[in-house]
Length: 397
Image (cartoon, rainbow, N blue to C red):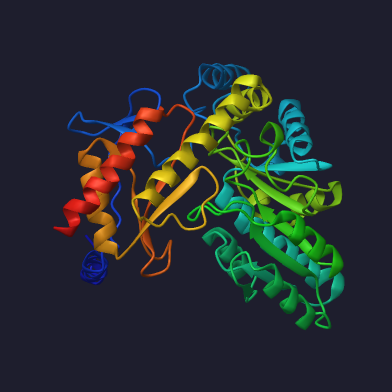
């Protein structure tokens, strides 16, 4: 107990009143796509980002174990202190090839990668051009990219979500401003499940000599040919994660050799952080082996089919799924307490579909974030749709 606890308690009470209090809970995996509560109830997982169901794939577990035996459970230090084993360098070359880039650089998490990239690019602008960068961002980019802007001391210029014409106007307005022009976006947005127009963004950034940086966390592995994502050959820098469709943990940045070398020497998240565990990277190697296989292509098509089926059922019930066109399907409900109550009712029906609330989404746009996985059955998707409709009927009474 500290003498300041009363302040923190007041803050927690205010969050609870607003329906924004967050509390970790115990949920244990008990099979493919199932999570078990402490009371023994099994829930069908419609919330995690394990799109291809790889996190419990036996090949990933086997390869993680093999790497652990060979290289140890931990890496020991930053790669600039104790070096990098050749297997990791080979893995980075494979990741670069996956994204159609010259080079790649592995970091410990997607959040860390995003928070590292922006300050490193800002430093380049300041040291080489003599001026701070102009950073233009889609207003719905991930919090970690905003954190990167804050860490860089940069005030981002926001353009309307997926509005290429608004970005064009802003680039024209900033044309005479010195410094590197940097555009930050995502190829798939994690809360709405919609896609950026990568071709239009790429052409616009080339036209205005702007550096296009794309977070591909929710596209890598699940979208594009062989899971390459949507930014293939269209961006100057791509950030991908291992913690979603690839079923492991960690992230990477893919770009030119010069850009990656700059990140290695200027990116604080690379310089000052212990390198990822070899066991984690062993699982990544296995997932890369699996991505181009026929089984994974079938899985990607299955996920797309299930997501579209669920969207159609929600639309038939008069419910709003926003601009979703991917494996992420929001059911937009409005207020915090409404979303929490419906999530509770749906969980009682046997499904985990968590309520997403501010600050993750804007006030009044709270939702259930429903995520499709390759191991889901058509029956499970239909049962979830029925449970959502039933819950909304109960809440209205």
